[in-house]
Amino acid sequence: MVFPDITLCSLNAKFQLWYKIQSLFFRDKLNVYMFVHVTHVLAISASEEKPAAASLSEVETALSFYSSLSTTLPFKPIWAVAENYRFEPAFVEGTKLMAEIGDMVNFQIIVEVPMNSSSPYFSTSWRHNFAGGFILDMGVHFIATLRMLTGCEVTSVSAMTSHLDKSLPPPDSISSTIQLENGCSGVYVTVVSAKSLKLLWRVVGLKGTLQFEVEKREGSIGYLITLFTADGQSNSSYYPSSGVTEELKTFISDISRAAIEKDHSYQAEPRITYLEGARDLAVLAAMLESGERKGALVQVKKF
Image (cartoon, rainbow, N blue to C red):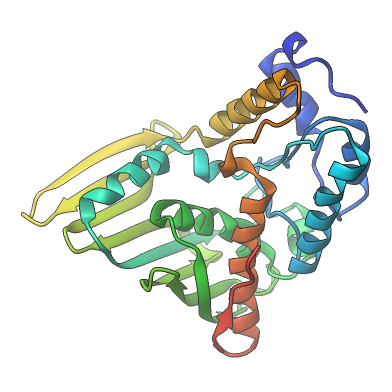
């Protein structure tokens, strides 16, 4: 399998080609084969989102393999994980607004999702067949936004999990405290057996609070950002969702520019790299481990 010259492909044609790359590194041997035969890889699924792998051991093996390519290939290909939340305009703008709330005091992430047979994601067998199920699969999105907004890595977690809806893989809910490297702590709650949809992020600072909430307008999903200031005022802006489009544009730009670099020294946009996806996964893996250990404090593995 060989990618055609980037200059000869339309965006749609390239997307259709990448759309066929639907399994993760160790779900089968597809991506291994692709690394040998193609220049760059974007790991995506029918929903344009996947965790970097099904477990930390897979991540370690994958990263080791990727590092070894520099000794077997004349260049190191770009390996990207399609984490579209990092490219959502709302969170890109929100990262800039974080300075307005001053020193961070606390954060809350609340996720309620009705994951049932009416959802197209429910019928995807791989989400039912690895540890963590939908909690892990969608959780990487929310950890990605937390790390992006705060600019901090997660150092440790303590979580409790439960499994009440037997049509879903365990667990179907998780409640966790999170400690960031800057000393700030917060809470993360996800329920995938809810009956209504709610996605909420709040970051509280000494000078104000920044809030993000998913809203549906004119049939499309978007994000409402509200900045609450110390004088009691608030200012809101709505951003339609376009993260998938933006991440694909970034990947196309990266491989186009990489092809121009004669010494193959081009560095990909960090937000789309496999390493960032691995770091998101490490946080969820620590939460799930803590849940299995009845809330024990678990240190997050560093990559």
